[in-house]
Image (tube, rainbow, N blue to C red; front, side, top):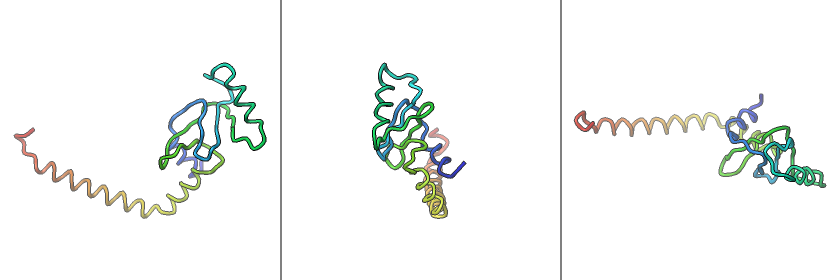
Length: 121
């Protein structure tokens, strides 16, 4: 499994019959399961057009949101590979950020707990 696939698995945790990735490609379940009459045929017809941005899949489509944009698992635009590489390349900064924020939140939580006395519970 690649870093991009791992990242995509974490982001794309919602399933559907069809979804459009931020890149403009529409992915659809080419088995037609749970689709309305004629819906699959229309998507298959559109997928045959030159320069089509329709991608049929063997089964459902997994999608999620990353950085405010819709992302589809396995999209050939490569969004997951790019983001996973960026995060990995900056893992020390990201880790330090998480540590600093956690320390700050722990300090705030301790101050709140210390301000409470047993009689207020």
